[in-house]
Image (cartoon, rainbow, N blue to C red; front, side, top):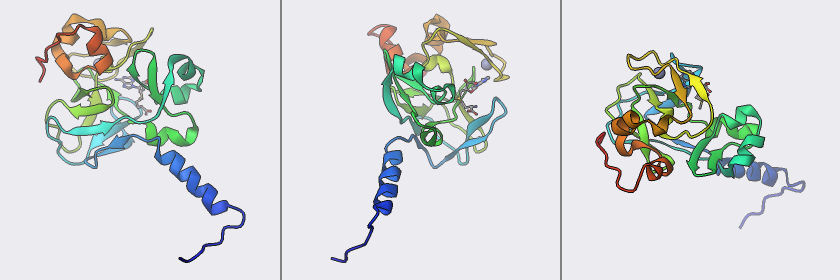
Length: 195
Ligand SMILES: C[S@@+](CC[C@H](N)C(=O)[O-])C[C@H]1O[C@@H](n2cnc3c(N)ncnc32)[C@H](O)[C@@H]1O
Ligand SMILES: [Zn+2]
């Protein structure tokens, strides 16, 4: 076998850095591009090919951290978080991980993407080329606070609360598209009228 020289370990060190980054990234379907300009806010996730109802559009990646660790991170990194269970989150912990971990999935009050489990995101309806992929943050958020919504849809709630998952109207609307941990809190016998 041929031997490669790497006396200062520079190549090995670069490889280790790349491998470390590869382990903390989210998956995005090749049918969408993330980071594109959004009409809702900042950058978004946009379909570049038609996506059928039920298809996986993204799988969230990141470091598994508890809430205290999440809150100790710089605000920009906290922005990459998705809560996955009571007290646990997936998040980027270094600036270099921010882009690979971010889904750039904006909130809409008439969303086209929901949860299947707690890290898998699926199309809730057929999505056309050029459409922005959006979810309702009520499907996975549980925190003290709120956000003014700029989704511009007819059913916009205006203010999106971190406790919106508790709303009976949204529980009826989304059925089992809530993240697993919020579905579990809604009771053991949750049906799925939205599917
Ligand atoms: C995970 S980021 C989504 C990507 C974000 N647009 C960006 O460029 O980084 C979540 C943040 O996007 C913004 N955002 C998402 N949906 C929004 C909406 N419907 N109205 C206003 N701001 C929104 C809020 O600042 C929110 O904290
Ligand atoms: Zn809205």
